[in-house]
Amino acid sequence: MKKINVCLPDLTKRYDIGKKPLAKLLGWGETTVMRYLNGQAEPNGEFLRRIEELSENPWEYLRLLEYNKDKGVLTEVAYRKTKAAAIKAILCDRATEAMQYVISLAEGDIAPSRVIAVLYYAQVCSLVFCNHPLFEEEATIAENLSVFPRLHEKMLQHGIHEIPMETSSLSEDERKYLNDIYETLNKYSPLTIAKAVSRDKERLLKSKNGETGAVAPMELKKYYMPVLKKYEVTKPTELGKFMKPKGPAGVKK
Image 1 (cartoon, rainbow, N blue to C red):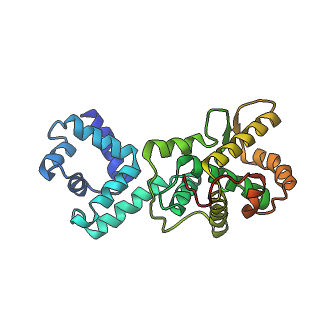
Image 2 (image 1 turned 90 degrees about the vertical axis):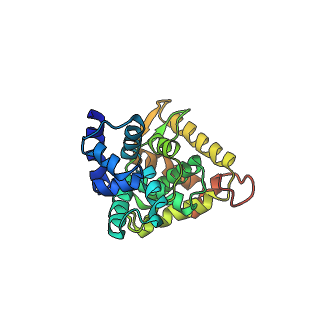
Image 3 (image 1 turned 180 degrees about the horizontal axis):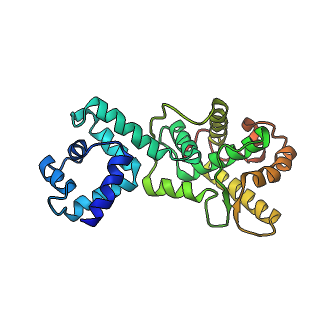
């Protein structure tokens, strides 16, 4: 019973849901599930795996919640409370929130690599033009890694899911930066964007004497200020000045 005792309190607390509503949401027979949850019966392996998956993956929990939304499984009050808790669990930091905002701009139809590119160049532009980062995530400069490997891994592991963002810690100006970079990069093919990111990583590596690893936001600012000035980029919508057009506008993948 150790595993269920570890996972269940995390699950009910994290998603602000009681044992009985959770039993209904899981849909495995309320009496049996309640016996598992109360320690009156030994849960089977499938149940344990499901509890662990939902505890570790708020995207999957939200998907389950939305799937059951119109089936009368939960009361309206219980649904709203646990949904808000699930979204809070997903938007656990500003970098993840910015990632989900970009996904919402694409209505969920976007590749992880494009999301990362939008975040990267939005971060760069915010640093250069506004003197502050959109988020504190450090970029990683290494040949075979995404510039934001933690966020990239989240998308690969949990998938691309558009979620409602009724409130946001991102300011209107910060959302506009993400909008502008998203629309600007949407004019270029995946290959063009990949080449631009690769080129910039190579130049950054050269400026760091080949030293791979994390690059703090202010290091990015120091590097990109003369670069954007050279290409006469004065605002996010002009970022295309140092990207070669490739393929039709509007390509999203």
